[in-house]
Image 1: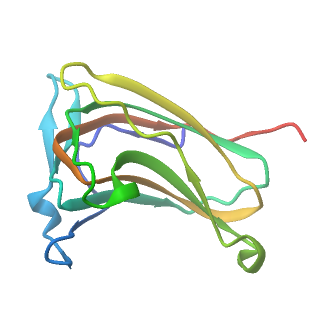
Image 2: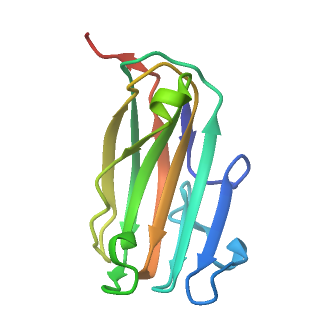
Length: 168
């Protein structure tokens, strides 16, 4: 296991928030907080607003090969309400990996987008997605983001598996 985070702190995570209306960065401490789910588990609470976007990301200085597969899994609760029409395609809650490919001229940053999160304001949901590197890389970044949603979202128990190699 490369990572197993229950958000006891935000150390090693970069948090950001942006307001579309004022076209400026916001204080992320007004958007993100750590809350108790139960006696043993903490979660990251993200206060969503239809005119805001926010993200939390972490860089892993781990190199790998073409075909390496990283599975990212976690629990989430998405109380979101999509505010349609404000910013078009930006409406979402999602997780992404950016592979920092060695041959940036040909491949650039390898952005792999997972499907967006389902909305359910009552139940915690389990999410699991496998990200496959298309080329050799020297690091990768895990990014959770939301845009143009209302209400709150919670993330907890993030696991990133050791890489496996796809058969060629």
